[in-house]
Length: 186
Ligand code: HEC
Ligand code: HEC
Image (cartoon, rainbow, N blue to C red; front, side):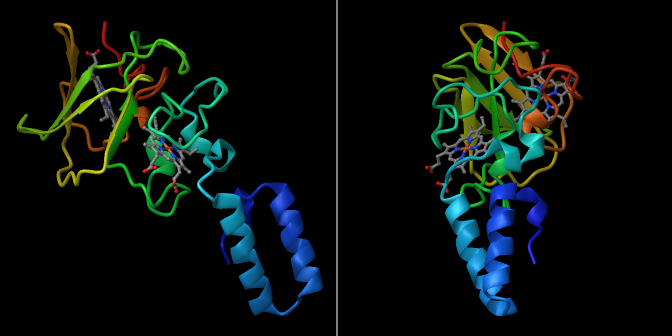
């Protein structure tokens, strides 16, 4: 059985009700599948992915709409990965650029910044541009483990000096995280 703990109590309650009404295990499993599908439906739910918030404040209006400007600063890959709620849209690299390392998430974003992702030899393999909420993402296959990133705009440039083993930027880039702060350019 899938792990029920990730579902809101409301759904767990419904499932218990279904289980009481239809004690046959197979029927329960089928009903549970339908309920899960109804809960999923492409509606992002931060509460289902505890690691996704990346120290951010509560989302602003529209931030939970499933679109390129959604949830700036949060860990995109917490949801956009196989087996998670946006598992049909897997990003191989994704994040948000801010104007300072200790920025809140819903403001202070840098739009129109160039994000170059290179391998450990500094050969640039993917070039992206941040959108109006500072977000960038790609599903381009990135078949290397040591990544170097360069963020630039208007002559300003910041580069990750050491090759990192992950492209899940906000897993390290949050205040108090391994990188000390958000991805930023100033
Ligand atoms: C709490 C989970 C969650 C987080 C965090 C999240 N997303 Fe999403 N996102 C979703 C879901 C769910 C969808 C809808 C997927 C679907 O259509 O099945 C979606 C849809 C999208 C889409 C539209 C995809 C399409 O093809 O229609 C884009 C683009 C996107 N997200 C980018 C991002 C970026 C960039 C980040 C990080 C800054 C991010 N998301 C963070 C859950 C999340
Ligand atoms: C595994 C943790 C980790 C991940 C994942 C990670 N970084 Fe970093 N990043 C660091 C650390 C640690 C530093 C500081 C040391 C250095 O520059 O190598 C850093 C530094 C940087 C810098 C330079 C900051 C400065 O002050 O000059 C940029 C830009 C950057 N990262 C962007 C990114 C982007 C964009 C991503 C996602 C594609 C990313 N990083 C993913 C850990 C990470």
